[in-house]
Image (cartoon, rainbow, N blue to C red; front, side):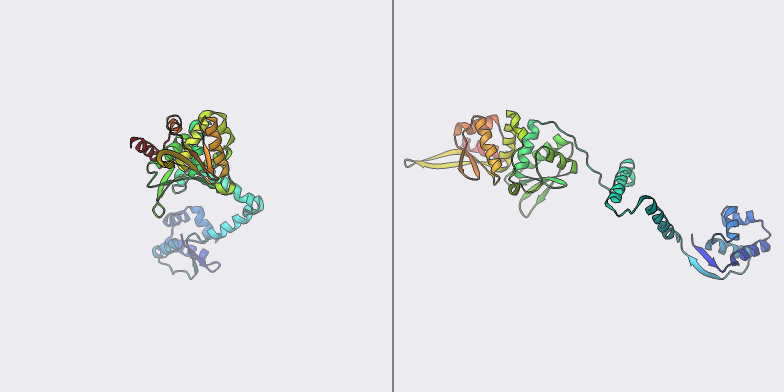
Length: 332
């Protein structure tokens, strides 16, 4: 409430005049002002400034002259002063809060309060907790997807899917991330470039993917390869191959001419600018009994029809586009 500033002695004289005019006791005057008697005694001793509202009520009730008010202090007038004093006391006790150590301590305390009282922070997004999966074929396939069309930043994990040719695959990717880590990624459409972005915002997820061999940043510039643990199990290699081929691979009509006779056969190719990834695809296919070819620096091919049948039977695909092309080719 607003307070009034009077010349020294005027506040005490004003209250004495009210008591003399009304004949009330100090306790009764305190009741009229709706304050405790102790506060009234402090006003009378001029320890504290009396409220503007109480002064007006006493003038009206006692019909005494209004004292000359030098200044009216608004409500919460002392907050800034008290905060400044408290700030200096805090700095003397704990040090400057502007240091990295001080900011870290304050940040940890804020996080603790948000966990304890989430209802007080309705607009604050809490750090996502993830489920930590075991090494498995499902995780190996996601590694292949991330190495193909994924990106790991400091705070997010993203997978880019063509909104036209690969329609439906974004749902598979989102469900796989959700199944493995217990969080639900979002899907957004970039209309300018016809790309759907599967986005999982989680610092813990980024840290976990780093720990299993997926680096942050540009994969081509860093020439990333497949994590070594994928080679431990044949099923893990197959799953990682599936993820890589579903994102950066395709099935096509391989047209060629032998002795003036034209042939049309199915072909599969994996194209990427990361040489370690190409080496993994070639090596894994060889270990699994296939006969891949490197006719150029940035592609690996499968051209034998029996091996393409075997690939879709043993390794398979979760990208609807590849299934449609495989079925359409042999149906025709």
